[in-house]
Length: 495
Image (cartoon, rainbow, N blue to C red):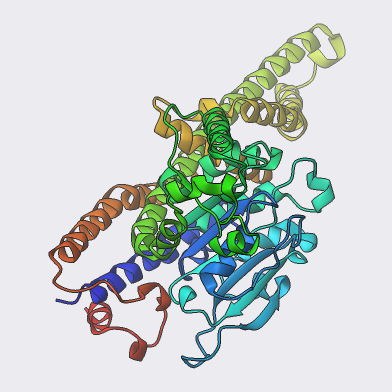
């Protein structure tokens, strides 16, 4: 049995489930602006965050074996940089940056999963780029380096919404590294916002790795303990967690030797600490192993959120329809009452009382019709607007929120639903939405369960050691030609 073929088959099924069943619904109603599979069809991603002096670039350069990113104490690069492998370079070639691409290329090339970032505008595109490096480290993953987080900068100064970009990238990343340095241990304002508001809603705790970097710059062990305690306190306040997440202590041995910190008597404490640089490196290299599980989670999460989104649309449409029916009969009843009152009043007028009954009835009927039309075309529009405003201001009443899971799901789609309802004003086919809700709900419940069972079987195979899981299945696109697919995938498609 060949697990790598099974893995590729399962990945293909996951992508097909998303592209054929979730994406059409998501794009039809504004849940997503781009196909959902765009976010998961490329290679595993590692997102690197941190303030401008936390050593992100030095860390990346050491992993790649070449100086790819500029380094320095002051902000040196304010761009989001995708660093990926150039697989066209022959083995044995010296490691180097082989290609540069700008943001416009990245945002418009369907090969890359960044189309959803177009919404951040041209200013963002000017601060978005790609570098290809023929480093073996990048064989099965790509790294996203980010601009250093600052304390005083505003969104207007950047020209785009930095936190929204971080959220979009965190959502598709398989691992998020958050770096701190001893001089600003978690106190930078932008870092505070990202950790408190953005990452908890866009990714999962087990995908976030905290690193206290550049610990060799602490004056003494006492200073290091003070910095570590400060970071633990800040993280507990920011994340709201009672338990402190694992914090890796690292420094660049190359930089330490260059600055002669290794020979400094005050830095003798470093001999008693393990530099966890290699642990962080192993965690980054291990990110592809989480890819399949993350794909399954992607299907589960978006299945649940899309179902909740459609549930809100159904609830709103039912309420709106009930309101319109009630309004229709109110308009009809009011017109009849006014028409009857007018008819009775006209009987008092002697000239009108002598008219034939058909003329009297026709005149009153015409009056009733005019009143009804005025109500339905003028007053009803005003009533609909009032109903919309009231409903949108009380959107939480559209769906029951009995537990935290439902609350989290609702929080993630609340603004999307509000935008959709504002845009279409409740004018959509209720029967169609209900049918699509049932299909998405089936994917969420039955499809997710089947995916997890398949993953459990694959894990059991890998634990038995019957075959290595070495196939870079993420590198094989779902629509690849048959010659590029393993036999298991071809057989699956045939049957």
